[in-house]
Length: 323
Image (cartoon, rainbow, N blue to C red; front, side, top):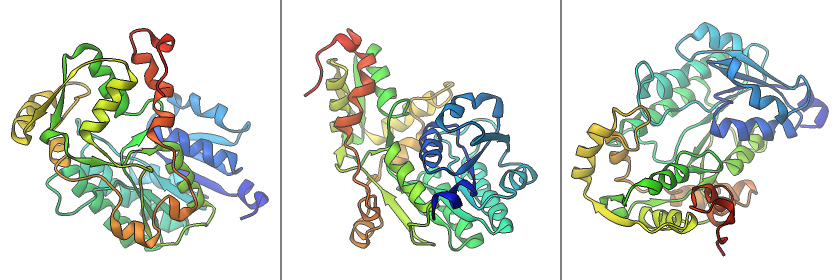
């Protein structure tokens, strides 16, 4: 796709104002696409405008529970990208509604326009998972492919970058908690991936550089246990805290109370997720359905994370830098 074609190509991005969405919008803008950001609150998307040229990025109102608004948001678009997902349920925001039915609504609207569909799911999506989150992600994939068989699906591991919900959360907890819990002993494996690298993969799909109907698994260059990640957070924030093993049963019981907090640090469903490793599968690695297979060299945790966790140190940016 040449530059002029990209300038003439409209991409609708659902969830474009979120953490990953900001990276995706920036990456698409650098490739000269016209971008329509579909969100529930367009008035809260002012931070996206500086990411592109004047008039390149435009926000519209859309709600996945309202098919008419979704259809209006994709009208005239050549590419539709769905980034919408939730980490815990609240009120009408249910896993099934957002990540399965909502994904199908977006795919149906894209199909009606003959638009290319790009859907972001998650590593661990599994119809047989004990976690509702993972089951709803798998159901979303199934529904998207049923409607748009040529859709490209991306499954990232846990995302990191400024404003992420992982490293920032635990660094914040370490400021006032005497100990950090290691659910299940901290043995669960993760392959954290930089949000900017995931955005680069999505942009490659928009440029037609991925294989239609393929599911890609996106992980960073290294695999860590949950314990190793907590040790890294403490080292990066220059804090000493106990790391206490918490059996899955006890963690689930505690999470049953924590889930009612406005932004819960842990829910029973997240405890169930921790029973399974969150890493790129051997099949995906062997078949090149990864960042490396797309020609993207993923950034390491050690390169990016210290650039924003310094604010959790007692002395802030004046503390000694990590080697």
